[in-house]
Length: 122
Image (cartoon, rainbow, N blue to C red; front, side, top):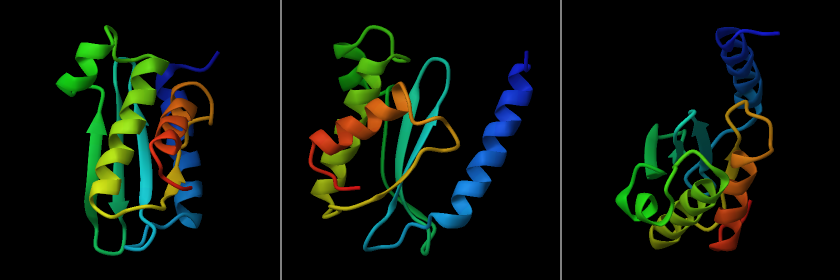
């Protein structure tokens, strides 16, 4: 059985491998996902300028009120919707999805589904 430190080390290696291929531009920024045990965070990033255009997390009061525990799939879907709504307000319609080295399953998949429901194109 792998230790937690080893699992995170392997995730970082996978993330570096994915980041070699994925690059966010001003026309199509990168939607990045980070998950911890208790929360989930989403950023939409323009890698050329090195700026975060939009950010959302399960720590925000609007999401905490709707969901009791913020580390579950329901909270992840709401974070994805919130990030997509903010992106659409800023004129961002298409993004490149960066799963952050995590398996596209569970909370990461729910973030993507929530963003798609709110109108973002991947």
